[in-house]
Image (tube, rainbow, N blue to C red; front, top):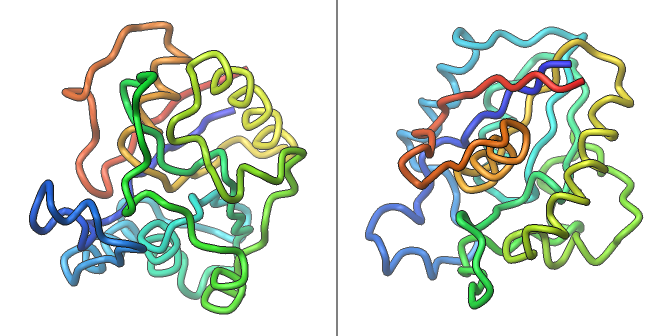
Length: 192
């Protein structure tokens, strides 16, 4: 199975770093909206496709713009949420990486379904500051979730640290922040 990880479009939380990281629920900028539209030609979707999305406003907006008028499966999953990379014990979640509450997601993004997850606390806490061992255990659950669709490829719209965490886990290679993708760049990973 091929997992195609896509970084969300440019968000307002990157406009004045590091101060803007304190912004709650940052949305896409107009440039971010344009980047999401360009995904339509870079990675055209069909009704056969599955799009898994992080529970943040900027990722949901990216997915909505990209998948507009395509009747594909759209699922929000907390294991696609923001993740600090590299993980470290004294990390704290920035306000910009807090997850949207499920009621807001249901109201603003009714075309998206919610993944059923055994650990419902992940819908509040996400995976941002989980220790590496816990993350790797949950990653196996996430891969199982993706396999359950029985599709050749799954698209995952998420965040730079999350993508790099999954890349490092799957490849076994030590990665750094230099390996982060730019906005709406994507990376293909094949898992068994």
